[in-house]
Length: 393
Length: 104
Ligand code: SF4
Ligand code: SF4
Image (tube, rainbow over all chains, first blue to last red; front, side, top):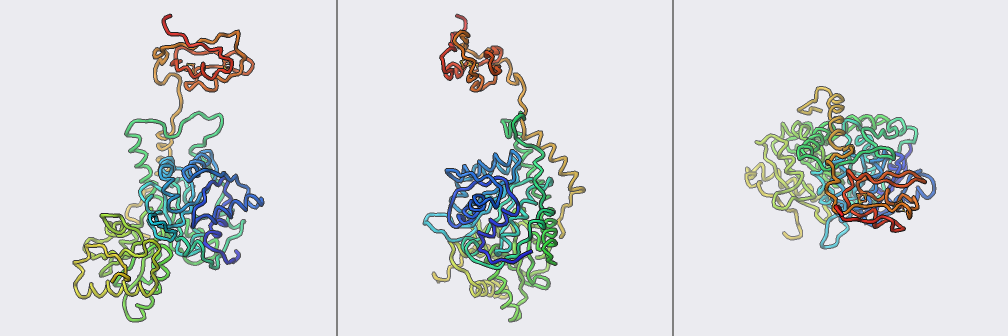
């Protein structure tokens, strides 16, 4: 193991290099570009023995790695926001064909208006497709999750593509110390890909995803459903194994539990701002509030069972979302509602859309208001979704 | 962790699923799986063999894979399945495939 200071984007490209990928194809888009620029440089210098395919668009980028993956290669691509939306059709092809493609999504809001700053809307547009979706809190996690994504996706019990989401600029362009495993440490953990159950190559005669009876569509989607469920176990296992090789004595798995043991109030968050939310939890703990935080690390598969466990003894839950389903509510919110005991009151706050900064004081304010409303018995009003826009008050 | 549904055997379930998935997703080609499509033909491609240079381009382009050809040999069309689309005639670089109305 060694320690280096890296920005999120470079950390992801270092992870891809350690994973020893065979084929990379991508199209540049802010704030992702540095990842694939760095990879192009690595390939050019001969540090990474991979084929780098330049393409005309993100749709082609994913189509290119789709083909490469179907022919047995370990592949990588990266994108953000509009680029991800441009790939949309191929995203579903990839999931339905069960190809273990790994992609970094550097989260960025969707225009108009043009805006390069983060929220979680872009990555969550593919929530229902069959991709595994992990959200990093810091640069170290962006690195770790990228390597783990290959192990998880290529596992025969899973065989689903993976997205590693990292917040644009907050992680992608911010330098932090990162522990990197050595090549030999990773080689034991991540052996070369075994391309079964199928590999498209000259001399083989079969079509992938040809026209079929309607039932086949339903059966294939059902099989993804089951694989998604199994992936919960695989993710927890892989996380433990990975942390062990790095000599860490913890493993968060699907959900990080932060000061939840005796918590009466549970906060749910995801992504980089969870660091600020934890600071707010610490400040409130110092003031005597019994508050804890569940940080969703993998939003697909959704860790319903764990959330139900953590929330079983709390009085109320606050879900802070950085993405919204218009006409419904926060995207984490609906998953949380489905997971916990129906009698537990849940408040939903939407914040940080378009990259609006939300710091620890804002989190503290949001959490205090939530507890205050609960204690004053005002929580029956919570059936609405609150938009946190302090500048408009 | 306490996940509510624990598959009895993760590996066993997965290998059954994988087999099913493979069978459903992948389609193997078979000869004449859509019936004797030669009966659909309106025009019949006929190779005027004298002009043929044995280049194999018609073989490469035939969308139904009904032309057989080997390097340095003449191509041969299987009329039981040739649908008469005319692609071979249009790609033949020396124009030696003629499309003739069926029944003439
Ligand atoms: S007419 Fe069409 S189907 Fe028939 S041999 Fe020519 S290319 Fe093939
Ligand atoms: S394309 Fe024309 S010249 Fe070439 S093999 Fe076919 S019939 Fe002969």
